[in-house]
Length: 506
Image 1 (cartoon, rainbow, N blue to C red):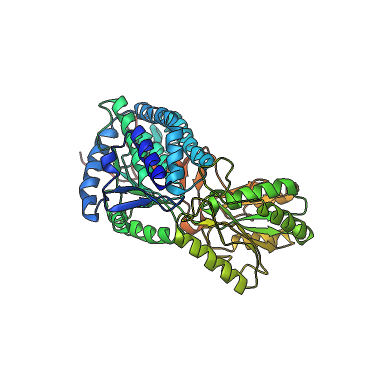
Image 2 (cartoon, rainbow, N blue to C red):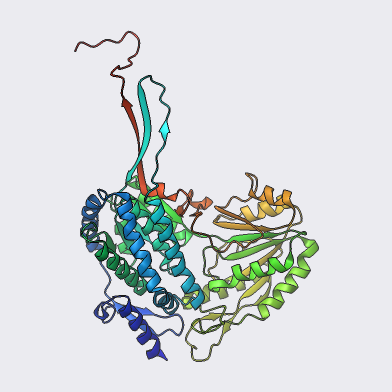
């Protein structure tokens, strides 16, 4: 079985154009969380390599920024075609390398296809404003220009989609891209890079050879990229801890950051809620991807009038969920990414008990043939209050249950944690829903009604956490973060308005 996973990964990579010599024999071992087996061995970059790589990216940018926007969009259209042709290959490789169930791996690739479609249209809509000038005989407008090389740092839990959200927008905006993927998931990064280079070959001479650069390595490599002043934008997705390390380093050189970090997301359940709908939404959001999404549901704040019924329904639902091999159809929960993630889950549940919580579930599930994988039993934890562990995000399928009867109190509890990516409320009361979405409601970048916090559509800019100052990537007007704005004033009258009494000899 070990050989089968490795052989499958190698076959998938070959189909996507990755040379076998690049993924074997290197010092960085790649293992699958499915069974802990080795599926590849790659050669990483060193921190000393970064400067030359950035120089090549900068040269590519200087050529690419001169290519018209719609032509840049054609490259992304071609990338979308490659992704459609290899959706099954890439989706299955995602499952093997990061442990997502197959349907989620395929869904992640579909997100890549969707952002390509979005970006192709965007390439003809990089609009600026026409602004009324206060001076007679003058016109004023804003224009948007390419920014420069964009550094993209992605995490293991969305090993391909996050790259595409950033790269599709950056490329149509006229930027080059340097990608630093998680060192846990380099194989999927190599596959994506290969597919994009195929699209570049189809586009022809307009696409510079160094337009996309792949930087596989450890934290020191990431730091070298973050610190380089020739990279005007760093878009980083990962833990809040990582974001707090990246942000000041970029700010110290007056660069820009787009940060999409932790969530510790909550759902408020009100007395009028449709509990059938709420239970389905809660379970999907809390246990999907084994609780390893930045948008995973980690807290529910329920009214006491319906608490007992909701908890009983959730206990029944959780009892029916079995962790299993993510490559097998029908599996809902796959493995955690590694042993440390499982240890973190165990430690969090122990702390919850010490803080007065009642734990239902938890522990390690045994999956036949995959005994070396760390498969979690999802945990439902009834808490007396929002304690320290509840305010700490644990990347695992742990769902804390809190009680609040007053809506203002529930919103305050939701907003009281330092993270703030996504949120939701289940209610059939229009006033409660609108309050939740108002300025006095959720303080998160995503606020949903009658749907869980997990997941986001390509058309809406993804991110906006309160703890990062608002990282926005993907749809809406997020493209503006990948460009620089200029305000232009044109004097078409021939007259120069001067302050009264000021004269010059000409």
